[in-house]
Image 1 (cartoon, rainbow, N blue to C red):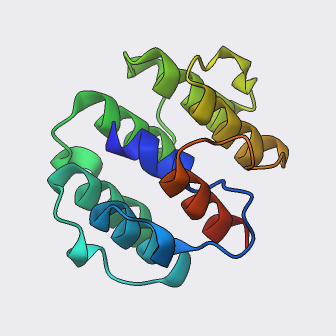
Image 2 (image 1 turned 90 degrees about the horizontal axis):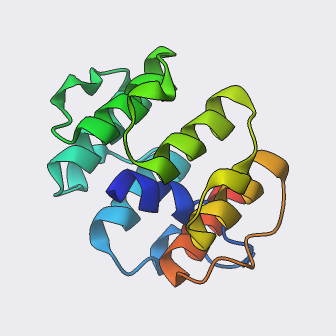
Length: 141
């Protein structure tokens, strides 16, 4: 679930917000790794840290214990199918990101807004979660 949140955090429309404005330390460290090239080592959550290492440094997704997060990582990093993701919103996000499908199948409004910002260039302003908006803003700069 943290990968979903991290992904959503990337698409905020607030131009001056950035990774430093994210209150959750793991999400802040993940954002800093992706946006500013910092190390993934500062992430305490094992799955989020393993996802970060896989995305940033080409390490294996196999160290991710959550099966949905592992499948999502494998889709992003290794081009595998999104079909193995059981969480509906994460699978729909994966299909949109990897295969250009619509974000409209994502039931969570913040996740849907994040997907539309990331995939379709829409505003992050509809994302209610402030951490997600801040990461979104950082990723869009």
